[in-house]
Every structure is written in C-alpha cells, then in structure tokens.
Length: 255
Image (cartoon, rainbow, N blue to C red):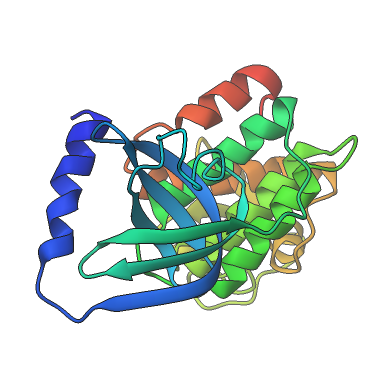
C-alpha cells in the first residue's frame, strides 16, 4: 500500500464518534511525514504528553503555508491540534529551536531512532521519559566527534524499557540475582537464563547486564554485548521485519 493510500485509509478515523480533543503548546518532534492528497501531509510526531501522534497538516505543501519548511524530521516544535479519532488535524506548529542540525552518519542514526519509535511505540501511548531520552539523543548526535554506538544503545535501552519489552537485568529468569561473573543467554520472552558456556544463542555476562541496568554503555565489551542483546530483542518484537536505517548503518559502521 502506498503512502497516499495509507493516509487515505487513516483519514476516516477523524470522523469516528467521540469527544473533540484540542491540544495546545505541546512539545514535540517530527518523526516522519508523507503526502496526503495534493497539498497536505500526514505528520508522525513524538510528543511529551501524548506519545506518538498522527496529524493531518492541511495545505502544508503550499508555498504560502506557515507550515512549509517547519515540518522536517528532528525539528523541535510546539504543536497544537484538534479532532476526533486517531488522526487529528494540525492547527499550528512553531519552531522552538535549540538543536544543531544533524549531518552525515549522525543524521542516519537520527533516522534510525525515528524508525524505531514509529515501529515499536503505539500511538497515543505517553512516555515523558522516552521523550526526554530522544531529546538527549539528538543533542548527543549533534555534538562534535560523537560516538554513535553508546548513544544508540542508550536510546534502544530506554525505548525497550518504556514499552515493556526489556527483560529484568538484575534478576534472571529463575528469580536468582544476576551474578557479575556468570554468563546468561538472552531469551526475549523469559529474560536472562544462566548458562555454563556460550552457544549459538546471544549471551552476555552478568557484568554487562548490571552495567546496562546502571546506564553504562561506554566500555567496549559492554557496548558489543549490549548491541547483540538489544538487536535480538528489537528483531523479536518487530517479528523479523528489517529496519531500513539499521541496515544502512550496519553497512557503514557495523552498528
């Protein structure tokens, strides 16, 4: 189904019965846009208090529209919308600034974060902590000589934790406390399962699990094992469907 068809299929949601919703001055970031009809856009945005939302930006492609040039990915905005149903009508989007534009590999990494959110976060599921983690990730990606790996791992970790997909890292599947020197197989459904030695499955050390729980991804061994674990869990919850930006990043830097 094309983007236009998806937008057309989504648009009738505005006419569903229900109370009118009006939101003003909501902090948000544009994740993705796609065309709707001749002059409009459907905007996927991540907002602080309403989670991921879909908004119709009517006339946004017209040269005279105040929305033209504002609705680009990674833009920090104050949004206003109204409507019924799943897809609301964008009333206003004002740029709030404060972020340096992403470039090069950091730009691709930013698109990867956006794709993760769109694919794994349900609409209208508010996660203020995730919103904050996304803003921090963008600021980090905009820095000079940024190391992409720890930034991506930290955000993947926060996204999986906020959506309930991250297993416990201090207690293994049998209820025993994770031991620093032990090895654990990563089971996306059960959690960490202690093993005597690594097999073909993804395994991490107890030290890595505890470091991840504390938010530490800088050590090379932790970063490598965290990458394998988080990738496994993401792939499981995507039901094997590939992420386009992940594939590009892997080709470039093995991330």
